[in-house]
Length: 309
Ligand SMILES: Cc1cc2nc3c(=O)[nH]c(=O)nc-3n(C[C@H](O)[C@H](O)[C@H](O)COP(=O)(O)OP(=O)(O)OC[C@H]3O[C@@H](n4cnc5c(N)ncnc54)[C@H](O)[C@@H]3O)c2cc1C
Image 1 (tube, rainbow, N blue to C red):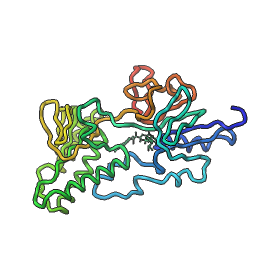
Image 2 (cartoon, rainbow, N blue to C red):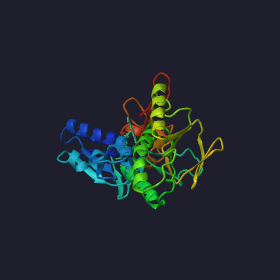
Image 3 (cartoon, rainbow, N blue to C red):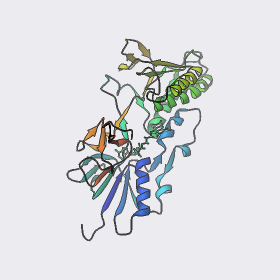
Image 4 (cartoon, rainbow, N blue to C red):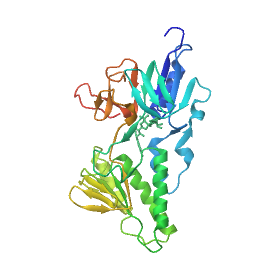
């Protein structure tokens, strides 16, 4: 290693990776290492706001910001590349442009959708996991409404997964769909869309009062809420639930779960689909590989149970 600076490679310029890069840049003394930030996009996305793209109105500047604005002038080298795999044993990142060796690696690639092996789900649904994905949902919905004939019933939309992402998305759609109905002269139905949740209430695991309040608000906006009935199978024409009930729809949006980004590869110890980390955010068993954010999973020291990211 003598004679050359250590390469500190950070994969993912989401909230986790960008924070690491910016903090490190402040603290790292000259000559101690080069910070290399890798992302498939040259912008940072405020992921927690992407559901707004599926609402009545949104301003792109509230959802994404060019990385050049954030890291411009700083000692952070940006590489726009798609990570395909991490070969932890050979200490290289396999990316769209080829292999990149690293001395220290920070994995902050976020998540990929978790389909739980549900038949037909991946092929027959869209997911809300990036700005691009949110724009695709918006585009599909506009297309479906445009193509429906005047005076007809609007297309059916189902959001499957009533956690925060699904609940927030349903709220945005409930605001936007009435506008589309008016714009395209469609007939207003009793329910504008359906939100399906496997557990007895939406926002499972949160304060029950919060769940109830959210259900009441959505119901008042003509969202039909179906709870306690997990998705069994997804078809082109909708979802079949465990009870045998069919929810017919023209568009299914799956918000039922996430797992570690698939690009991390198979060299790590996984817990519930995420990379196990120790108290210092090392990937379990690796001294020079760290994991932050949605890709990581720490276990509670007392109970041994996985903690939220
Ligand atoms: C609609 C919605 C609402 C949410 N609301 C909240 C909330 O209210 N509160 C809360 O705490 N959390 C919320 N979250 C979750 C929160 O956004 C995530 O926990 C957080 O963004 C995770 O940060 P991260 O850095 O691990 O990953 P991300 O923010 O997902 O960043 C990952 C980065 O890696 C890049 N990347 C991914 N794959 C590749 C690849 N193969 N090659 C190169 N680059 C790649 C991506 O482009 C991205 O920039 C919400 C999420 C969503 C979708």
